[in-house]
Length: 381
View 1 (cartoon, helix red, strand yellow):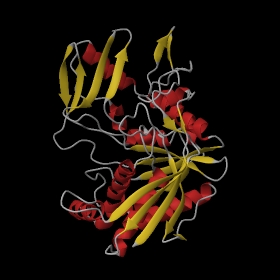
View 2 (spheres, helix red, strand yellow):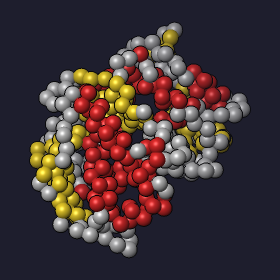
View 3 (spheres, one colour):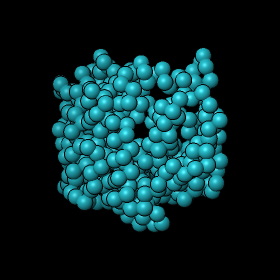
């Protein structure tokens, strides 16, 4: 049997739990298998060309109710340390919502940055070369663009691939600087050929002709880098809170209010006026919540039937050797909601409003173009 071994380094706090996530933090094979399945789907579509082909290959590789997976997985913790300390930073607290409170206190244990673990896959001899190549690509994608655990799309739990061996032979060259990281990512994307998806909006999150990847910033401190990215996202998205005569961000900087129209739509809804469209910012994911101090009312923007729609924006902090980190942002546009699924705007005190879904991914693309990212390195397209 063939053996694949991928070693990852945790570059940002990883909030990942087992049966009781409130009390423990651990690396579990089922969680990692789910991540590999996600990245397999994302990269297989442009290569296999159709949903039916992807589903058939997925059943062969990962198993189904009718057949076992084509590999056995195990996880070896090499150097994992658990913690539950405060994580300071306005951006960290904002986009760590659910695992970190606004004061930076963590709400559950996490795995500390710097830890390493190895994922081992024992592949069936019956696997074709094409199939083992897809598994190798999934291992690579996880360690180039992704992470594990809660809030991983917001940069928490970022995993940097350090080593990838096939039957004991190293088949991965770890990038040591920004230029090498760009080249490794471009080689990967050329191999999977995102332009193989002939529609720019695949039915699920996948690489396509509209995929966008940028290295937006570098730093010698991974957590400070993540905080910078999150603060910039807050600057871009937030309307701010009224303080004196102006609206400010949590660190007292004046809010830009780039989406004043979103604010006005929800204010109109809460004051009984008729509205005809949903906020533009829902493209960052649902649910999308509002609270108006002046009205003492809150509103929730969500899908009519689905509980949530994850963000198409992936933030990943990648280690480039000792004390050098790069922030990678990846946009994977796809059909935002299923056909006929409407956007619901709800408030406990008011009648809900249902509107057709009409998102624009240009909203996220403009975030890539912020002045703070003027030195960004465009990886793709």
